Every structure is written in structure tokens, then in C-alpha cells.
Image 1 (cartoon, rainbow, N blue to C red):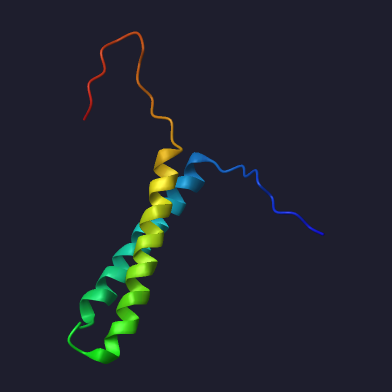
Image 2 (cartoon, rainbow, N blue to C red):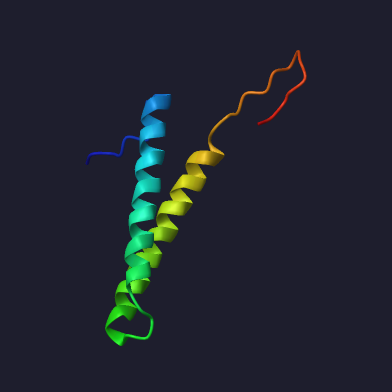
Length: 81
């Protein structure tokens, strides 16, 4: 029986591309959600699906963010911005 590949080799560029695609999808879902009215019963199921997709995308972006290691210089003062 085949097994899942649990080790991926992605470059920083690959991760940036994935994040940007997820953000673009989020913007698209947001526009779709705004076009639907909660007052229309026919839209209620579509709204649920769109909001679930938005939640899943945001959670994935959060998991990617949590796996990053951010650089802070150890020898000099860090100035954020």
C-alpha cells in the first residue's frame, strides 16, 4: 500500500507563492460573500460554504506563518519596521 510523502522540500519562493495564492483566494471569496445576502434563504448554504473555505484558508496561512523562523540579529540592536 502506498504511503504519503511527509517530507516536502519547498523554497522560500515556493512558500511565498503559496501564501500569495491563498491571500488571492481569500480576496476572491470575500467578494463572493459580499455579493450574497443573508436575507435570501437561497444564499444561506452558499454563505456557509464560502465562510468555511475562508476559515480553512486563514488557518492554513496561520500554520505556514507559525512554521517560519524569523531572523533577528544577535550582535546588534534590532529595529523593526
